[in-house]
Image (cartoon, rainbow, N blue to C red; front, side):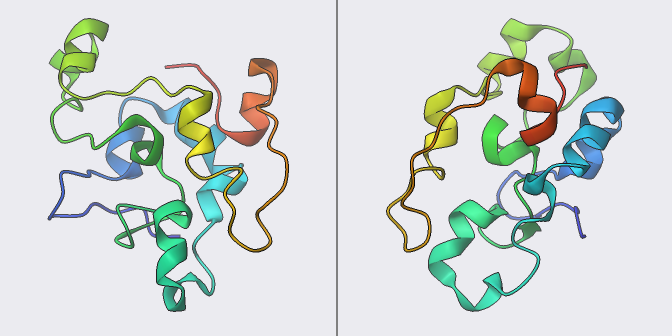
Length: 130
């Protein structure tokens, strides 16, 4: 799986997030989000917005697919201050964030989506540890 950065849009890629959030990164790698978009999605342009991060440059549903483009908030001096990080573009995902992709009306995707309880996020999204 390639988790590099895009040079065009301010996306920095999960590898850079991993520098400070190793436990979260490792937890994310064990979820379906880390591997979606790695097989067969290239031919389906309409699938890229949900099955990749940054359109097609970053495979899988990486950190920034939910937390926003990290170019302005990734430096440690910003991330250490939650208010500063939010002002710089860090998104704190909610159920609405998940519903941008889950619960779509795409064929084979039109099913009921139930947000997992926070205790199960480690299995589906990632752990919440910094």
